[in-house]
Image (cartoon, rainbow, N blue to C red):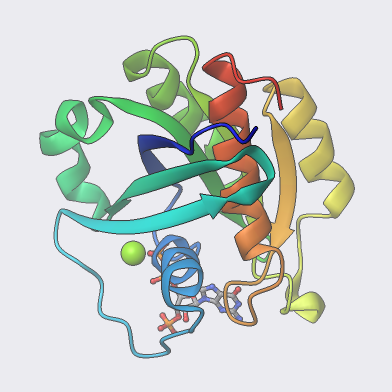
Length: 182
Ligand code: G3D
Ligand code: MG
């Protein structure tokens, strides 16, 4: 006997400083393509993708809120986080300041606005720029443990490395938080 496929709708956010690669990660995940000439969106851009999880016989519609200009963030903050169940928290491995802002800024906001069960994964992006790296992988791992992120994944939104894995792992963690045994 096969169980009927279940459907979920999850709103997630992609957090992190300007230019860490938030929009590029979404583009790579949604279109499998890297748009070199992507123009920053105004306010928040809302992108949808249906993810089929055959492993658990579930269909998940992901509603991704992509934040643009950081200055606009204050105005839309509560709307931005309303109903959000998970986040990718992203820094740029070539800019140490973006790493430092994870805990002091982005995670702080997420925890303030999203209820306790909200899942988050720490992402170190731009690993293709290996000669410019200033945040070692070990540092990322340490931070992920410290902030109790569900996972730590290094990505290249430019070449697609680990991008699908990052989004899928977040979805699995959200499902676990909802009591799914996976
Ligand atoms: P944001 O949405 O977080 O502000 P964007 O960041 O996705 O707009 O990316 C900011 C810049 O970083 C863009 O370059 C983009 O092409 C680049 N970028 C994003 N991810 C990667 C990556 O994994 N590797 C490399 N090498 N570059 C990346 P521009 O030049 O358009 O500003
Ligand atoms: Mg952007």
